[in-house]
Length: 568
Image (cartoon, rainbow, N blue to C red):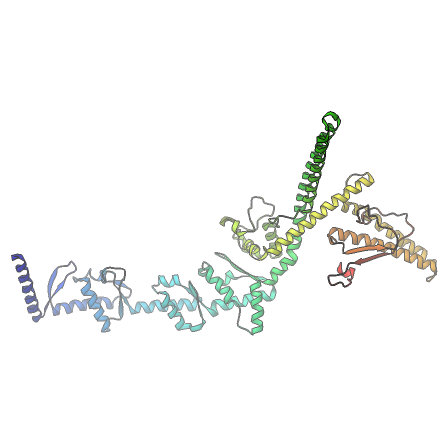
């Protein structure tokens, strides 16, 4: 109780003392080490002028902590003094407080306005010179995003394009890109836009995508803009970490029409042959199994004591089993559709495109060049989801994935393999039947046609030679002259029929029996299966009479007649 009274007395004495010292022009302040010191007003003014002089000479931001190293004042007292100087405009700058610090003075920074102006001048100059400035560059210069936007809009207003990670100048960056893309659309070509995009922006894929898809067309008439916008959407942008490419819709259409079809045709022949060989091996295995079943059936038949109704039932079951096996093989032949994964290899497509567009080779070179289509060590896949990052391949392969790998491409590949496989199966069946009829080794239909082709040409030459030799000795309008002329024309018509039937067979154009050849005589060898074999069998050079050949075709979907030559 006595201690409490003494404490209250001491506090009262201190208050009386402070009031007395203030009247004398003296105040109590804290030093930077926390000690209480008495200073006169003149001393405080002199120290304040010292702080002001230090800050007037400052050209860059300075921490309040660095000021207290030279002035024996508490940081809070210095902070209050600087704020007062700024409010009275005795200092051309401002105090920035650190909101994350528990003490307002601990992280305080004084920033002179001259420094802020230098920052702004630097950013404005950089932007006007280079046509862009990134948020990262502004942050390094100590400028916030809001201040950056305000700064750029003050000098360019609505022409500046503000994106997520950067601001670009419409005239310096966007306009050249617009000119190049417009030229690409007109020329049905491609362009390497990386040459016109600053390297600092290549890492911002989202911003580049926005530029290309939203700002890459010039303002024009409504009709022109609508057309170019449609063409632009049909084209393809490829944006990687170091490349920006644009491929026009016309170029993509050319690839689909001119480059891919031959590749698909060659691939289909190879792939169909592989499938056909597999089916043939399976059929051979089934035939061997059938032979074993027949042998077992014959053994059972010779043992009459063990044969009865049960053996007869077993035999029927065996036949059914054999028939089912054959039916399964036939079903395999008819359901041999190419698997969904049966596509022309990506490396093959990319190499063919690079041969048509050599400039793409230089662009692809920095990513390892163009892979050899026959190199099995190259693991380039169509599906980007299946690709690891190291197997990305480069911009050319990414273009093929994005622009060419679609449902129509898959359908074209599958249909081509199916058609080639159907042709191979028919050819092998036809060659087998021909071999049985003539007792010769098995030969395919194309070989037979090519073997008989010289004799067909020779027969036409004989007819033409006969015509020119005999006709010169006869009257031009005599009955004999007309008959000879008619026979020569019939020989030529038969020759044309053989060529036409071969082309229809080779390209599998008549799976639905659209085209029909007929004549005024019973002349077509159907060999019991309804298919003409005349076009690949050797021509009968001993014939003296020739039929008139007619070509017709079935009605179209609307029931109207069709011109067979035009349809062919």
